[in-house]
Image 1 (cartoon, rainbow, N blue to C red):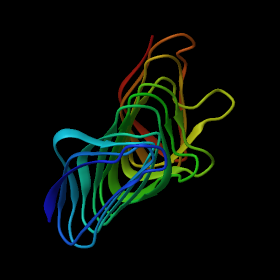
Image 2 (cartoon, one colour):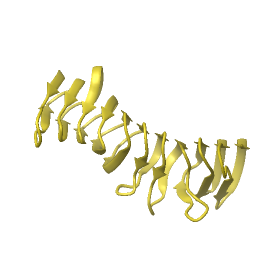
Image 3 (cartoon, rainbow, N blue to C red):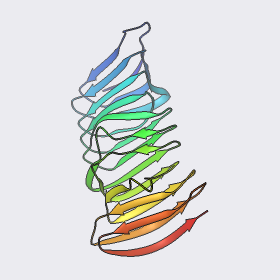
Image 4 (spheres, helix red, strand yellow):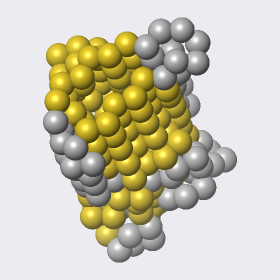
Length: 212
């Protein structure tokens, strides 16, 4: 266990840290890869800037986060929950968790390479830019998604969930869900072409639905 603050400078320099307990990250930065792993604990944020680099690789037997990061790509393997807030556009290259998942990006968020399967858990995805998912359905007990747009008229976002909250800031919402019953807590589409289309294979229970 321990608190880490480390900086690696120069091209090709990576920052690495391994521990047998919880790692608290005040700041960990490198021009290339920041690799943090613990074999018996969590990785959590401290008082500093968090993880900064080109690529972040985070591995913990327990939780990862709450943790601030600023990387362009990230691999995450957590035994329980994941809670990461990234300060730029983010591409996930690996994503495995045994609990609730929360990922925020101050730009686009790309899950095309990983998909997201978290049956029985709550998933929150937030992007100031676009959300890219790819072919596999997003699977979770509940989904809370906010992005510039969600899906498109030609390619709907596919989900498997019982509870859905969706919001956009710059366009429409296009979601196809597969469950016996879907509760839409709220669905708000704002911006040009702010159409709202949500389908489900079973019943739909409506909360608040709006398009502007």
